[in-house]
Image 1 (cartoon, rainbow, N blue to C red):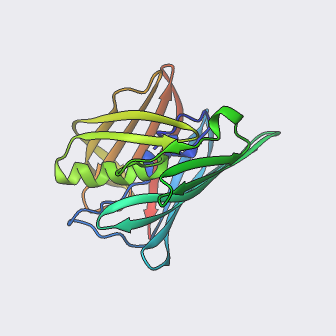
Image 2 (cartoon, helix red, strand yellow):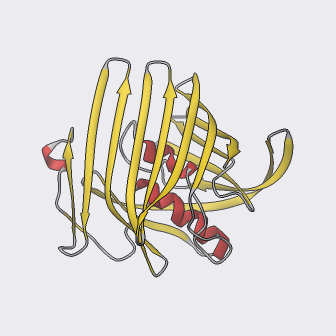
Length: 229
């Protein structure tokens, strides 16, 4: 989530958008509605997973809050349980400032490139390795590996950069969903370089019940689930 180095990237908040692809869960369509807060401004968030034919899927995250609109999507395929990013788009409207960035992951050539509103030094190409994820797919991998009890260490390839990202489970915590208290597994990013991402994952839910991103000790993005369809 939540996990992209981009300043306003939804992928950074995207830890919020995870589903398990381990035996406990199958990759399947879903839509989740969230109550959102971005830089202290209340709004709404939505996450969807839609089939694109064959083994391809489109995973989308959007947050709307007044003059702020954030949208990100990743098209990926599922190769024997390995979720590989194929393309992506990240657009943002922050009051009067706009940005629109694209990503292409060419697994035949083994490189990733970026276009749109990116700096020349961030356009790539970057060499790909088996198991690489982008910001959104990182969240799917976390949910899968938490369920499997595996270490939460990843190689994130996003916007012209490669970054090693690690998370740890810090315990269980009660969280309220639709007026009901649920036990959640709390997962925290350990190497956020001034940012910290925390997610609360509830057994049986295809997405986290809550995702909180903090920057320099202050809440930046907070997403709390209202309903999952």
